[in-house]
Length: 89
Image 1 (cartoon, helix red, strand yellow):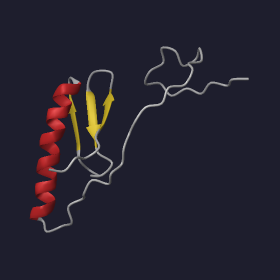
Image 2: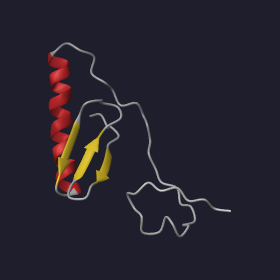
Image 3: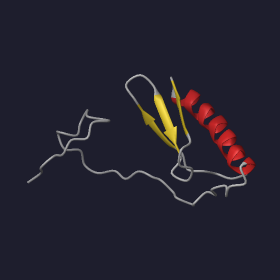
Image 4: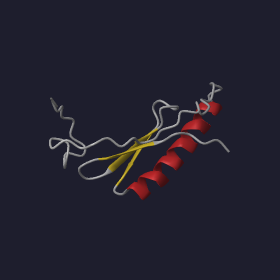
């Protein structure tokens, strides 16, 4: 078994997923749980297709993701998903 890092992104009406280790493999779903299932299936099929084409199957890179906590500034509060820049002096 190989463990690939997967990034899940919420949208306005659905979720999407991709792995930085496997370019071109994406999935979507109405919920995160559905997207997780869809991505697992998509990744399995994607890797099988690569192997069937006698191409090099990408292996997990060992990338690790995490979160850090920083103090919220007023412009960031409630703006999840929007990319705004706050000038703090």
